[in-house]
Image (tube, rainbow, N blue to C red; front, top):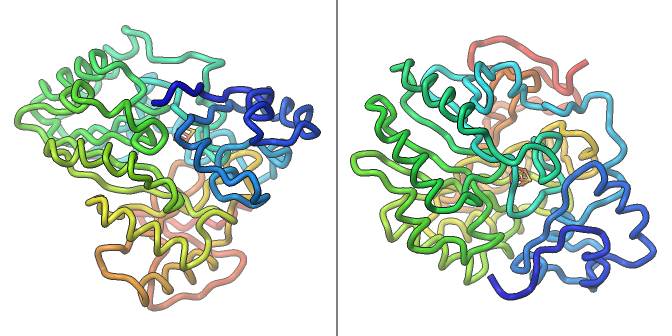
Length: 348
Ligand code: SF4
């Protein structure tokens, strides 16, 4: 990363001309509740002349974040319901989420774990909690894949990350380790040789899923960081969140998906915005998302098509929202989860 510092307070944002001085007091209220961090790489992408800049919308706090809607929840995808030991979510039979850290390189204003992540609380799992999570995985031969998430696991020092990957790789039934991260776009220089080595384990497959939402995030530096992972034999997938005013038009979403494919990243998930507190201004409707997916289907190569999914509120797992040839779109819909149970969306 350049010598510029990470912006962590409304005062930092004002000093960097990313937010006007008259908004500072309001932003202090937001920052008191939800973590703020903007790395130099992402700050440099913000067009300060554009009041609707799509990068700023993702990272600069907004007073509307204090307006929580009754259907929103601090745990919108129901992690806690499926957390048998601290830091581990076991929602589906063959895979678990493991959350070794609760901090990130940047804090997204729409984060579905915004109530849990940030430097204010516990930063990382204790050694005892991590050992208990590893024991849980060891004792369950059905667990084929471990997904490292958080927080952002790639903020860990390579030495600690390498130790964790080695511990997981030593479990015979764990065949796949998947890492979800924003670091290649937020802080590309972190993806150095030691970190790349730390992610690899002989005989096991490591995948890295990159979270990015706007084509401008795929800078030359970000693409080079991804190339360092991919050239080392680590396949990459994408995950994006559909966000109002960021990527909710076919042209931008199409450019984002093409940017992934050009970077050798297979588009994987386009998430419908989760019902995280104070994020209504960034969410689209499902009907809008389905219309966008139909537009992508008509315009872009099959390589560029992500799966548009909703994490069904309450911890019921992911439901595919489209594209679908038979669509009945309205403000209120029923979603069927993978076990065939039906849920009203938004919840009553
Ligand atoms: S990087 Fe991920 S976990 Fe961290 S704030 Fe953004 S969405 Fe949330």
